[in-house]
Amino acid sequence: MRTFSRRASACVLFVLASILWGGHALAQDLPADYSEWSVETGYLTKVKHNSPLDYRVVPTQLVWRSPAAFDLWRHNDGTRLLFRHRVALLVETLPRGAEDYYLGFSGAPSIELWLPNRATAAFFSIGGGAGYINAKGVDGGQGQRFTLNWFTQLGLRHQVSKNVALSGSAYFVHHSNLGMTKPNPGIDALGLNLGLIWRFE
Image 1 (cartoon, one colour):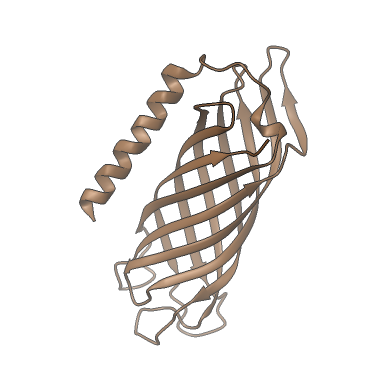
Image 2 (image 1 turned 30 degrees about the vertical axis):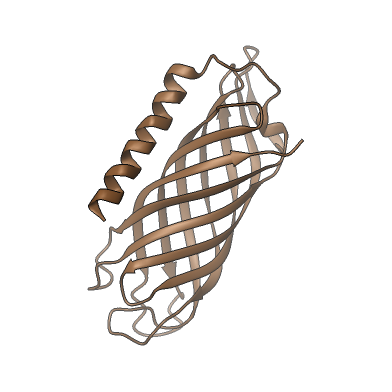
């Protein structure tokens, strides 16, 4: 797992380096004015001692982002702060912990700050949804199969071609059933997330 974490960190650094040094490479329509799809995956470690189990989470998501719904701020140099909708299907595997997998969905706004080069953006999302976890009734594990999810994400993305972009982000996820069972330890995990983003003409 440590090897995986090192590789994920190296990939995030590569994405960030591409953003910092390659931001001038593309002049194009703003990608956020179109709907986009992405596949995102990462590696998260437990950050809160709400369970005695040392949870690890590998989140994989199929994400849809809407065209920009409206601008929150715009500068005459081309910088834009805008609002998009984000909907995701979740498949999470748990290499450590009482359970093996979580299947669900989530929805959230995507707040994005686009630079004048129209190729690079910082983004932030916070939202949640619901899903199914294969709870096993293990002490320290989740209390039932129906489980809510809440997440927050902060990252950078950069276009590598007209229709394709890469992203790297910090990603936090919380799973809980809102006290429908006792105990309800929940899962809180934080780590790195990488994404491949594309749009169809």
